[in-house]
Amino acid sequence: MRWALVKVALAVTTMVVLAFAVPLGLVIKEMARDRAFGDAERQAAALGPTLSITTDRGALERAVASTRAGADGRMAVHVPAPPDRPSAPPLEIGTGRAGDADLDTVRRVPRASITEVEGGSVLLQPTALSTGKIAIVEVYVPEGELTRGLTTAWLTLAGVGAALVVGSVAVADRLGVRMVLPAQRLARAARELGDGRLGARVREEGPAELRSAAVAFNSMADQVVQLLANERELAADLSHRLRTPLTVLRLNTASLGDGPAAEQTRAAVEQLEREVDTIIRTAREAKPQTQAAGPGAGCDVSEVVRDRMAFWSALAEDEGRKVRLAGTDRPVRIPVARPDLAAALDALLGNVFRHTPEGTAFSVDVHNGEDAVIVLVSDAGPGIEDPEAALARGNSGERAGSTGLGLDIVRRVAEATGGDVRIGHSVLGGTEVRVWLGLDGRRTGGSDGRAHRVRRRRRRAVPA
Image (cartoon, rainbow, N blue to C red):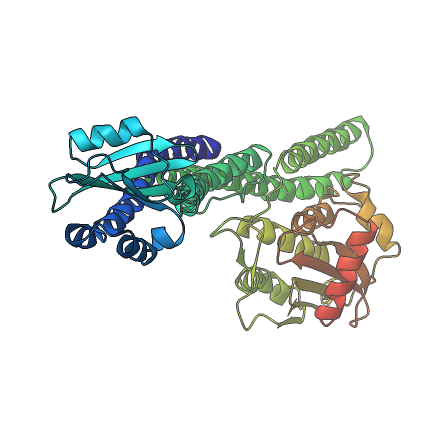
């Protein structure tokens, strides 16, 4: 579309310039010719008073020499013989270039005439003498005088025309950019949305039609995000509703004793738990990776942390756990959807309650840096013997009483922003899970060199 507009502007402007420039160039040429002959007529008319008074050679030579054309040798005067001396030769002053036939024609019809000669043209101006005869003043106009200044005028005209063409093409290109860029952004956002990046949005700018299309696209993307969020909420609710009664069943079957019926019951419960874990794992694996990069996407990490801590604090109070929360006194937006961040926090805090004894203290700290946010979840429990294995476990389900998806959920949320997850020893004496959340939403590319450089820079920017 952009090049089509440029071509149309180029063709139209070129036709307009040619339509005006060609006739104007011919007019300029004619004006230069008229200027040259007009000057010749004025110089020829300057000899009229002298010829009307005298035909003396000396006087006429002085009169001719006083003109610019005469001084340049471009003027001649043809005076016929006087009536009282018809046999006397005619008086010729200066260098004549016109032929005798042209001179005779002007004498018969006393009217100014222009005749082409070698190297230019001559103006033949008849002048009546006191004797009743006709004298002819001849002024030679070389070809250079006829075209003097014409080349400069044509070049100027061509330059103005070229500037008009270039200007129109530039304006058409800028207009094309205003139309094409919003369309390209809309197409790119559609591809990103098709690739699963649900945070893709389009700036509502450009022509009215493209703005309407951008509004419709953003509305559609918001609806898709909302539908998927509802689906994830349903999966999370399913996990909470099913895992609790299964835990009770597993504990009850342990007290059934021995016997075929007890063994069959325990086997059935284990089979049911495996099936539920499979359903939960499938729902989590089917969750598309979101990278909230569009306008209005993301959430306030401080607000989400406070909300989830308020939820878990009730259970912590029942179990006698001391809870500390820090770093949530001011809002910090991150490119993560609120349901995703809430699910990650629930997974981390759920692990604290599930894998540490009652009464174990824990804390949540939020640190904000220039290009990243760190969420620290620390506890005073027994710790994790092999942190790398815990992070690599993912969906293996090796940990007792767990689907193995808790840290995997956290890792996916962090990597969607270009961050990562680290496990270490906390100041409370137990486990510390450090979650890096990038503020610009760029992927660090796994564990390559660029990723490590980005992480080291973020560690220097965000205090631990």
